[in-house]
Length: 221
Image (cartoon, rainbow, N blue to C red; front, side, top):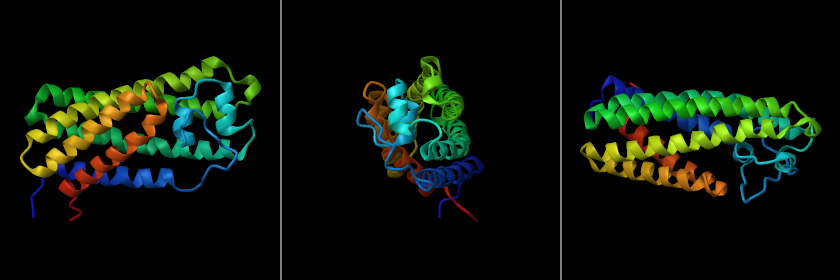
C-alpha cells in the first residue's frame, strides 16, 4: 500500500468530506413541484445562484412564505459546511502540488480560497432573499446573489484548470486521470458562465475528481 504524507492524508480526508457534503446537499429536504427553475436549469439551488430577475425568483421559490423558501434556507446553511470543505481542499492541494510548480500551485490554492469567499457572500445573499417577499425584492438584492456566484464559478474554473495542469506532473496514471477530469470541470464551469444550465454538468467531473483524490490518498488508519 502506498505510504501517504500528512498533506496527502488531509487531501484524502477532505475529498471524502466533500463527497459526503454533496450527498447531503442532494438529499432531503427536497423542493416541491412548485419550484420550476427556468432557462433549462433543473437544480433550484443552482438556479438561485444565477438568478436574473424577480420572475425567476418567483419560479424557483414562489412568494414568501413558502415551503421551498424554507428548503432553500436549509440548503444554504448546509452549503457553508461544503464551502469550508472544498476551500480547505484547495488549500491543501495547492500546498501538496507546490513541488510540481510552486507559482501555479499557489495561484490554484488562492483562486480556490477566493471562490469559497465569493460562494459564502452569495449564500448570505440568498439567505437574505428568502426572508423577503417578491414585492420587496429589488434587483440590487438579486445582483448581490448572481454576481458573487458567477465570480465564484470563474475562480473555481481557474483553480481546477491549474490543478489539472499540475496533477499529471506527478508519476502515475491515476494522477493523469484526475487531472483530466479537473480540466473538464474547469472547461464546463467556463462555458457555464455564458450558458448557465451547463454549470449543472460541472458537478460530475468535480465529483469524479473528489473520488480520484479519495482513492489516491484516503487512509483512515
